[in-house]
Length: 591
Image 1 (cartoon, rainbow, N blue to C red):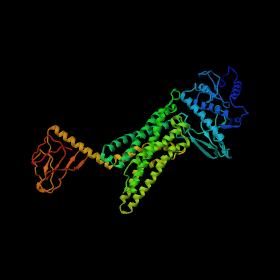
Image 2 (image 1 turned 180 degrees about the vertical axis):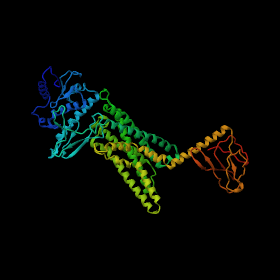
Image 3 (image 1 turned 90 degrees about the horizontal axis):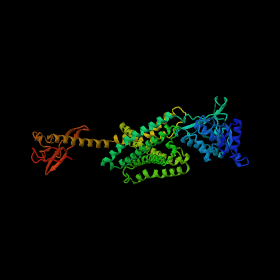
Image 4 (image 1 turned 45 degrees about the horizontal axis):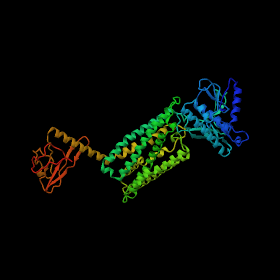
């Protein structure tokens, strides 16, 4: 075929001429309309077909990093320099990704990941050529549109720096980073002086240093894994506590917390799985190992994980809105609280499913590659727009709640503590409403001082929300603390009763009646836990002091009624159950 030739010992110049004319034989002739379509690659203009092959050859040169196979500086082919490859020396390869046999032959010299990355680069170059041809004529005083070997650059005004997303086919590339290219005041792209292999000439240069930084990517990855893991550790017991106590789970506010915490928990779990299975595998993959990273395999399981990660992350935004809407309605209209949470359940779990499914369908049709990790362009706003809308509305809710609290404070101007409580309440609501996520919307330009540190700060804010909401609204919640103390007290009392029973000892407890005449009555009786109150009309007795490991203080006594007599007791199991002193008394079972 015309895509492969062997030189048979011909001189290099003759070989170049022969291969050039042969490759032209597979391209359109000069009489066709395509001969007038030219695209720019690295400051050179090429006819469209020539551009496609030439740019694809240099994609191989940049990505393959092989000294045995080189791209020709001008001609659209690859040349095998030595016999150290699977192909004989002086073999000519035409890098045409539309030709299956040519792709197979080129990929025989690459690992599977590099082969897939090479084809992505070639396709990006073709898209760039089409983009150049469809753009308006170049304005005066601008740097010309260009393909630099990795990325496509539009016409750029002089004296400015243009940014584009880092290409995903670069090894160790950061999907959130940007490459930058500077246009000088004279309307030319920034260039650098090269000595080796370029005869001391200047060539255009693009800064990709911000795209490829393996150590920084690993640092951000481990930071995200740590924050998500800590969030899961705090969210899981918080959910158990909320669901264990009936008095808590019956409250509408707690029910909303349970759903929001559940969404955060699953979002953190999906993020952990994605970072460990996909991102870590992509960063630590050795291109020469021959294995295909999960990201490039583009399997069904990887896409399912991407969908679940996107869905549960969107759930957290909508549940933040539900929390804000519920609290705002309680404060603005306290006499008519919501009677049903059906609307909140449907919104929190159903609305994100709708727009996430729409995104996935469009993604599967138009950009079904790399496990949907690469940017989808403007269609990303299918997910971004509703999530951002939830944050904006919650910011309005928070400001209005603060306004209502400050208005109420005007009725008590001489109490500065009220003002402090209002500010404290407002700051406590920030992680619940997700207002802190606004600081992650803006990204510092690539290469600017502090950009790496700000990127890591963004990772921390995005992945630690579960930790803060669980800490503030569960473990620091007064109702939860009171329930936990009561539980510890009951268990301690039952444990103490069990120990006494095992020793065969009956413990008496002296409870003091309210009237002084009966004080000390039955003091010599230790066989009963009950003491009859002597006077009529007394409705209770003083409580006994119970010291235990969970809490210490006054434990309220229950009043038992037998006929017209009042009894006070401590619910503690004893070995004996008969009345011993203070006749007529009975021993009750522990509660």
